[in-house]
Image (cartoon, rainbow, N blue to C red; front, top):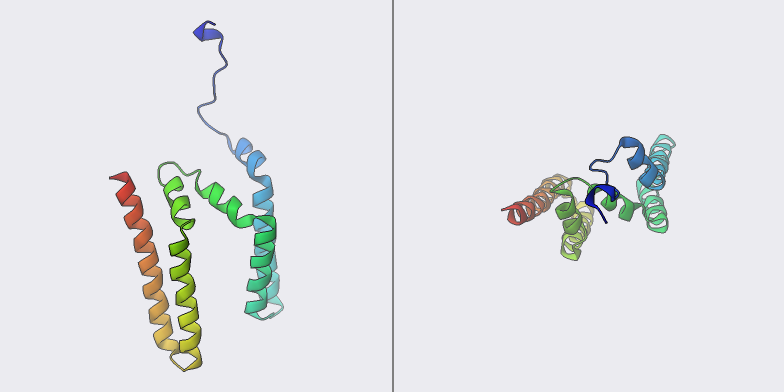
Length: 136
């Protein structure tokens, strides 16, 4: 077969192709944002809103779709998707939430805020370190 007669793969993806491929994920995340906004507008308890969003996201696989979209970003997208899939990353974050609940009940709300900022900084540092380690 001659090289010139083979079909050529497109070197770029258009916005139309992106929306055609990910319309379900985008629609699900729009629904999730609407659920959150309506819940906040009607003063529904935030734990109930969070529970509904988590259950809806797990049933519809919205979180997997979001990681799939993140992984499309050239160079760093696949690395960020790998990090978000790490169980250790999720365990550190979950442990931070449990400790903050206990501290708030004991009256250390200001300290909890500082602690949560440090936890987020630690997790962002892990992500940046992992990306730099893979790139260099």
